[in-house]
Amino acid sequence: MGYVGPGVVERLRATYPDAELLGYDTAYFASCLTHVSYLPERKLDHQLFGDIRDIPDEVLAGTDAIVNLAAISNDPMGNKFESVTLNINHESGIELAKRAKAAGVKSFVFASSCSMYGAASDAPKTEDSTLNPLTAYARSKVFTERDLKPLADSNFKVTCLRFATACGMSPRLRLDLVLNDFVACALASKNITILSDGTPWRPLINVKDMAVAIDWAIGREASNGGDFLAVNTGSTSWNYQVKDLAEAVASVIPGVSVAINTDAPPDKRSYRVDFSLYEKLAPNHQPQYDLVTTIKELKEGLEAMNFSDSDFRNSKLMRLKVLTGLQESRQLDDNLAWR
Ligand SMILES: NC(=O)c1ccc[n+]([C@@H]2O[C@H](COP(=O)([O-])OP(=O)(O)OC[C@H]3O[C@@H](n4cnc5c(N)ncnc54)[C@H](O)[C@@H]3O)[C@@H](O)[C@H]2O)c1
Image (spheres, rainbow, N blue to C red):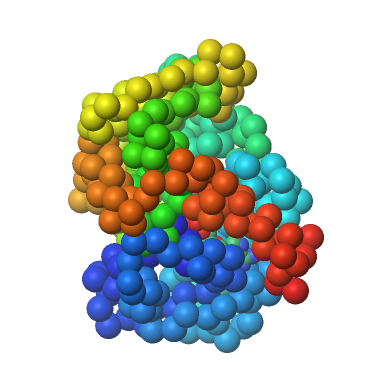
């Protein structure tokens, strides 16, 4: 029930029309539906509500494949809820994998992140490059990959998809992502203010292409990548500097100015990524969306929502705002568990 999930449901329902598809989510953002008048989860056979920290055995029994998307899923949330982030993303993710393996699950797909490369030189990062996680969120991904590796074997195939930064339209849209933020700024105020000096490298992937990669990972043969695989997932042609993203948005949406905050402290999270391994292993599941198509798609989606809120960085389209709001209204406790 997150930003990425609806595309995954759509894709897996198409690939496996007869499979039993089950969703499990604690539903932090369940009310954050955007432009659609239907529930994306309707294509599942079951949507269960529960916490990954406490999954009942019945959920795992008889399951062939698990896609673990459940996470405190960005740096601002990870900074505010550091120990909870490590607990949900890392410890609970590993516990889930151990129990999944014991229950006979054959394929485990983990939504990892290229943010684990952290601050890097201009040379593109390969899967063998040194990891340099700069935030609790990125560390949670590093630790999870490290501890998933020894669990993998010929009966339990593990794929860690190190995704580029997500972007694009989703029925559960988020605006706390760089490209989505720029398109929202352009529409709401005709002005994009870059919250850094614009030089960081930031590879991107459309959420629907993430779903394609997840579909590939579930079904891949172990002979294609091994029992354990960690692979950069995105496209080499989608390595951009943040200022190029802003300029691309301004070229699609007329009358938009771009301001670079020259006083901003340098954003150390900068990395170019080499996606050639994914290209080699998954030639038929390569990203199809390009930058301009994604900007147009976001523009149309936001317009369909009658979006015009120039104060959107304080709205429920920002995940940190949703979580802190639920805490302030005493719905969630300090550990982000429902009261
Ligand atoms: N969006 C990106 O740029 C990006 C890039 C790389 C990797 N990823 C990873 O992909 C996955 C999905 O990302 P997203 O953008 O859809 O995030 P999201 O925050 O929109 O969705 C995450 C979902 O996980 C659920 N969740 C969180 N904690 C839970 C818990 N304790 N128990 C059960 N459910 C819980 C939330 O309710 C939410 O529906 C995450 O693991 C994220 O780290 C995302």
